[in-house]
Length: 181
Image (cartoon, rainbow, N blue to C red):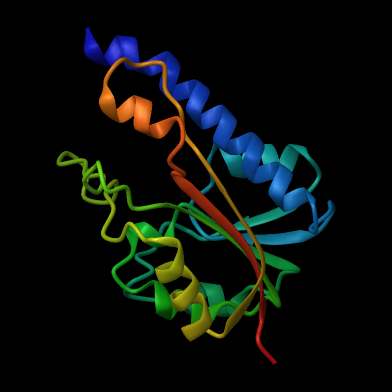
């Protein structure tokens, strides 16, 4: 019963997140730009393709173990939408990117909620949930300079204290960065 009630709200939250992500991307990266999208093909990468971007995705390899494929792709921009929190070693991926531009988003650490964990799927869990300054520092160490950034909330229609806190506490953080010279 609980899962059924949450599903429509989860879909609304995902739709809102995709709209905000695409709006942020469109401010400086225009179709038909070639994008290396770190992560396997998904609904958001398909929306990007439908908007006219040329999308190349990684192949589902364990990016903590190897970044060889990332080294082979030359693209106008690399995107990583909610990927880095799943990696043990996001720094290795950031250093492997060949593009001069990066657009990446992460879920922010929330003081009132533990890091996301799906006990039934070893890939669908968060090793890192960053504060904004931590992600900025990671990007800097990886050789990136942040050009612009944005945060947004993730409100839900569920009753309770945490959903009320989500109305005004930013959950997502997105940045556009360029390779340091």
